[in-house]
Length: 396
Image (cartoon, helix red, strand yellow):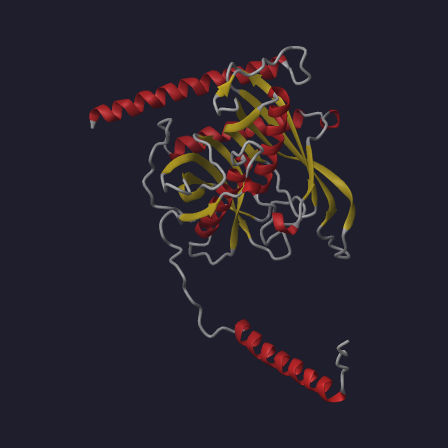
């Protein structure tokens, strides 16, 4: 048997010398890195709209059991792009304040076509409107087939962000002193959306939606609800200030909605849209997030699902006296959104949705009537958008 070489004083001393030399080199190089002589400019942050484009290959772990890419995966990628664009814009002004963009919500997002494993997902996001205390980011998503290279649009979304002053110690516990209202303006054409609304009209439309969300969350009897999902928020879920990315919450909400949909239909189900998704309170690292979903309304071919989010602040970040964690959970309402799903056959065709009857545990007459009114309004808006598009084509 070959003998194992034994350590000697000579080779141990050599190893120590090598380690010591490596440590000295590291200290010298890290000192140089900490004290750069000149800043390197990699791109112009003042480009109007702070556009962001990135792409990623869709892998098996991005998909549901039927092979369609999970709607929550797309939502998280959209919000990632929106966060980058909005944060760049927040820091493009002249006030010198380091700031971050925090997700306030998504007024709407449409899923026009499915995306599959093997497709390349490409997302473009840019700031399209700046208001008094919030900004809008418009995102578009394309799928590129891996074999043919054929590309087509799959999603469109409008996200809203607020500007927050960056503090390396975090955002505190409940006070909103971090909120900044002086958002740099953006000089981009105020193009109307598919409903013919300009930026100011879209901003005006979202205000009553936020007020309605807050009112509904105040009326919730949280004790009577059973969460579909629970998850502790980790550093990997948050930006460097400790605030959890909106995309993480949106992905959890889509997953909870999907669970309600698949239980109701017992088929493959996919997200086709979301609307009135508002994050009303900041969720931070260490919070225990609880997600609830319930079916609100069913038509012949679609179903609307309400998703609610609460969180428990398991400990506070700071106390003024000792700077030690203060234990004891504090529960608060965090978000609400409305998701629309369809049921698909094994051939990928839409199927009829089982009706939401009075015997169903989720049935509530008032919620059902509100859901039906929203469904009829969406149909009306789609018809008007088609009419507007055909009218423009005729003019051309």
